[in-house]
Image 1 (cartoon, rainbow, N blue to C red):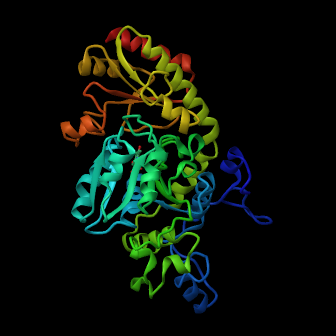
Image 2: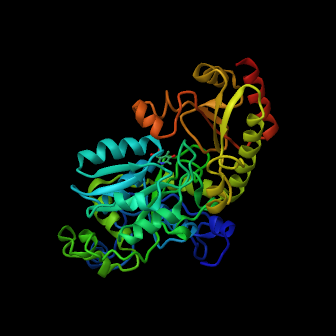
Image 3: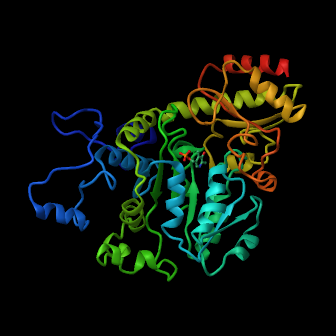
Length: 423
Ligand SMILES: *Cc1c(COP(=O)(O)O)cnc(C)c1O
C-alpha cells in the first residue's frame, strides 16, 4: 500500500472491506459502540488496544478518512477535526502553552491571523509574524528559548506566496522545534511538505480535499520521527497525569504528537470531525488528483487571459513566469493550484463592478471547490484585519480573489471578458 502511486491511494487507502462488507466505507452514525465485557472497554480507555469507544475520540468513518489523508501526505497518523481553524489551533496548542512563543509567516489566511493574534494571545501563546522574504539569519535571530514551532502556509491564502520550506525547516530543526505547514491550497497532490522538512501538516479539508463545498473540516497530520525529547516539549516526554501517567513518546513512539492531540485536546475540548462530513470529504477526495490538474490548467489560462487584458492592472498567480512566487512554486509545487488574484484598473470600485457583473462566477465566501467563485478579501474574509495587517497579509484594497473552478475554461474566460467590458 505504501508504494501505491498517489491516484491509487486517493481511491483505495483508508478502508478495506472484508468478505461481504460494504464496498464503500459506510457512515457509522453512532456515538457509541458495544462490547462483550468490561475488560475490553478498559483496555480501550487505557489506549492499550485500538478500537472505538466514543465518537468524540474516534469513529470508523472518520478513521478511514484520517488513514487516507495520512497516506497521501506520507505521514504516520492524522487527527480529523471539525474545521481547518480547529486543526491549526490544536496543532499549535498541542506543543505551545502559556508563556510560549511561535513564529509564523505573514500573509496567512485571515482566520488564522485572527486565531494567532487574538485568541492564542489570550491563552498566553505569543505568535510573532515574520515577513515572507526573511533570510535564514534573520529568522534564526527571532527564535527564542521559549519558541515552540515555526508555522507557515505552503501557498498563502490569499497572498499566494509560496513558503521557502527548506529555509524554514533548517532554522526550525537547528533549534529543535518542528515546522508546521498548512498545506490547504496545494493539497497533497501538488505538494508534500514532509519531503521538504515539515514535521506537522494541517489542512482545511473544507477546501480542495472535499472540493465540492459541502463539508467544513480540518486535519492534523504527523510525519513521525521528530525528536521531541530535547527539553522543550515536556508535555510529550513527561507522564501525563490527566491520562494516568502515560508518556506519549514512550508509549506511542511512532506518533506521540497525534496521540497527545487526540487524548488531551479532542478529549477535553471536543470539536472532532463528524462521520457524515468524513464520508463526504472522503468522497470528494477520491477525485482530488483529477480535479487538481484541471484547477491548475484553468487557473493558468485565466491568469494569462487577465494578464493580457487592457482593463486589468495586475495579476498574481505563482504559475506565471515573472510572478515573485514562480521560482519557489517551480521548486516546491507540482502545480500552482486554482486560486489567483487580480486588481482591475480603477481600483476597488472597478473590482467591485467586475464582481457584480460576473454571471457564471459567483460571489462566495469560499475557495477551492469545483465552481468558479470570486471574493473581495478586504471587505469579506479579511474584514477583521487592520489596515497594517492587510498590508502584511499582502492584500491591497482592490484585490479580487478568484477560485477557478473546473467548468469549461472557455466559459470562464467569456464570463470575465464580458464582466471586464462593463467595468
Ligand atoms: C479556509 C482555510 C482555513 C480555515 O478552515 P475552515 O475549515 O474554514 O475553518 C485555514 N487555512 C487556510 C489556508 C484556509 O484556506
